[in-house]
Image (cartoon, rainbow, N blue to C red; front, side, top):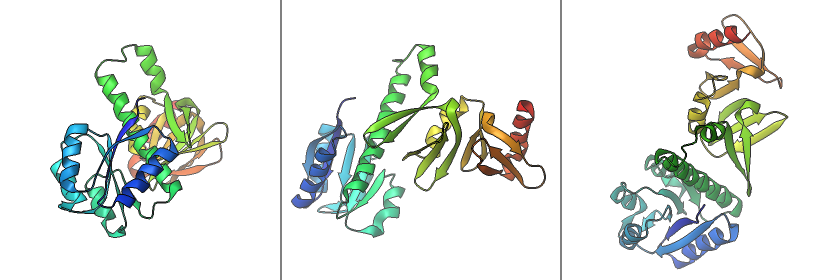
Length: 254
């Protein structure tokens, strides 16, 4: 993949230099194509450079980072706020920011932020290529739909959906448990994987936060509270709303 075009927007030169240093040091295929010290300057650079991600301060000359986002809401790009104020986080996510980083920047947290940006942009490119008909071979597309890419450090692991035991939504990330004894974390939300699971009839949603592989179910309980026990010993409760549809699937399997 081509380098991810990056714009850094902060009114203080020291902060811009720090972000650029981090981006270059962590070597995750980002390229800083410009920097701005005001909202007006940032707006012009976004118009002409078309960055894929903007690292943006909140308090800026000529308006706030939120004012900038409101004025360029039509532009397809990711925004990560980098600020010394923790009081704007909720507002940032209401403006669909991808992440919120507090100054002084911690390298390990910033690394995870870059991974999150990288995953989001790679997904966009994949979906765009699919819509444009760049992947016409149905067998190839089917094979891709059976794989889930998990970014771990500087490696990307491809998990086979067939090997999954369960998938669990956590606060801010998704946990995958697969055979044999593998536990993997993704910064993406569970909803980002629902399209893939919808193509695999054995992946069933048993409650708001959990998908299980029906082939890995070893038993289920009867009664008002219905639990499923999986091959690794994990036990999950089926929600009341999902109970009827899940039991129907289980009866067909068992």
